Length: 192
Image: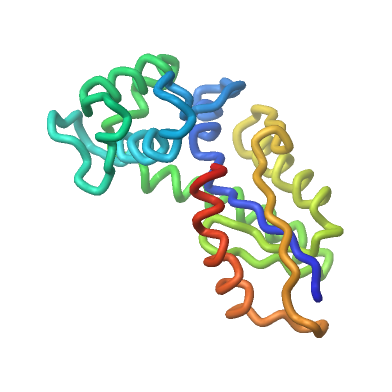
């Protein structure tokens, strides 16, 4: 089969928020002391807080956080405390702007490979590329990020790659890749 690797670029959103302030994020953005098993919930709350236009006493409706043993206000406070240097990035509705900046960086990565006539497939917040080109993908992403923010980033530390074997011919069908990635959706949620 065709050996490919997939990287979820959207995992860098907290890093982008710090880079906008000229800082680097050197630790897990979603470790706020409530246990690693609740990391996905904290990530959802973090993103909701970035998307919200103002602080709200009622929690985001689509996030199930009761299993953390904390209230929405407690979790909100812990997230703000953890991210004191970027506290002003929460509750001002910049989520869409953040996605736009993410897309600008992704575009630079895709153009890097397009200039070499190398296919890199963007799927949602991810890149799919031939596995042997994974080191070049890491370099291209690091360079695009550093150019955009003038802040270095070590993609290797925060990267989550998923190896896939797809198809038996030289042509890879997009539908097969999307289907294959969907099979690993639970894996991504558990390992993000």
